[in-house]
Length: 259
Ligand SMILES: O=C(O)CC1=CCC(=O)O1
Image 1 (cartoon, protein in one colour):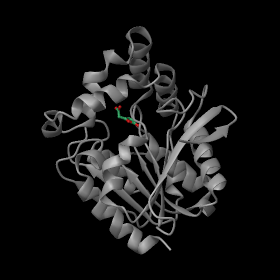
Image 2: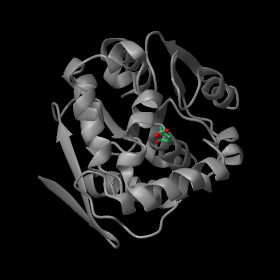
Image 3: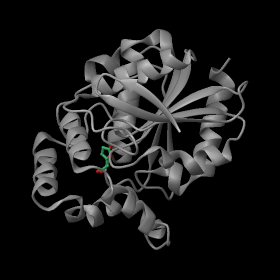
Image 4: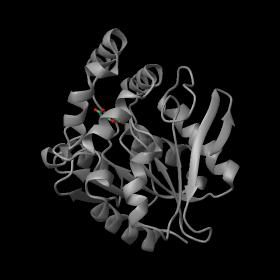
């Protein structure tokens, strides 16, 4: 068990893969912990995979009030603590917002970025306020079924693993979940992301009920030279639903963009 002590508490992280492999840091989404990447990392044993539980998620502490920039500062602290920069940084959804913010704040630490199922703005202030109110009044159970529909394509929702993913969101700290919703409500990365000049690959799922392929493409279009990929038969979490397809894109990207 590996923990980095931050001013707000303990940040849990994990490293897998060979010490001489290309270093890739992974940032997970709202309501998921670092197990989000299990299937993808199993497809890519050659990678030195570093992943962490952002504040309020997984085994990390709740971490008070925070914005996306604070989450990016946590990623900076981890990369500097491990002395592994510049890295390839892969982020999904709010993790992709962490990636965009980190690349803008500290281009010296990010060699290249993969932005999965993310955008410069996600949802609206009103939609996040509704979600926060539902969680605060009734708990995450109130929204768990809707979240599963947003995360997964219908074929995946018929699989037995769905129960485990539902449990993952249900077991997320309500304080941490609401904190991340607040960070999402106030994030608009348009200016920072439009100024990015590193190699970027952007990934969408053709059945994403949360960040549609059109929304994700609009963000790709802001970044000069960004490659855009749509993974078929995938919802919001293509690294879970289609890990081989995700790994193929990431492997090609690493071939061009890791040392
Ligand atoms: O829970 C969702 O709707 C999906 C999502 C939005 C931001 C994020 O990180 O996940």
